[in-house]
Amino acid sequence: MKQYNVLSVCGSGTVTSSMVAEKLREALEEKGYRITTTEARPTEALQLAQGGTFDFITYTSPLPEGEYGVPVVNAIGFLTGFGDEEFLEEIDGVLAELDKQ
Image 1 (cartoon, helix red, strand yellow):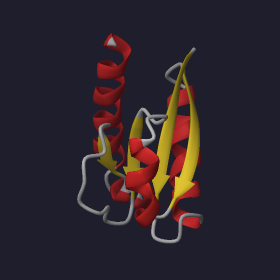
Image 2 (spheres, one colour):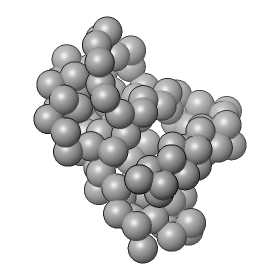
Image 3 (cartoon, helix red, strand yellow):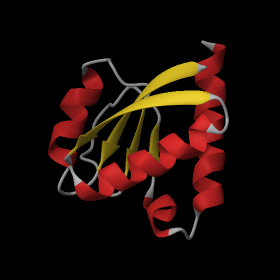
Image 4 (cartoon, helix red, strand yellow):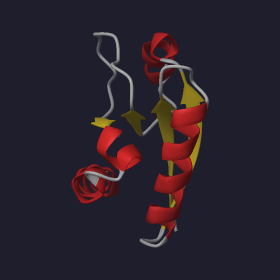
């Protein structure tokens, strides 16, 4: 089972990011991936991402401009349920690229 680290970002750094992280964890386990998630606020995201420990970022609040160095995926549709498939397709693409590395 492949293991990835995900930074999950929302406005407060707790509630929404935790919901997205848990839902994503379940969806990816079915596909043979294991993820570890860290929840954060947008103001913390850039510094955390530049620390180099994350494989990709999901977010439900706008992220500050900057060079994150990893794929960044908007998770609003995943959170609301109106856009689950599109979000998971984008994540599949990210994972496919990571699997090549």
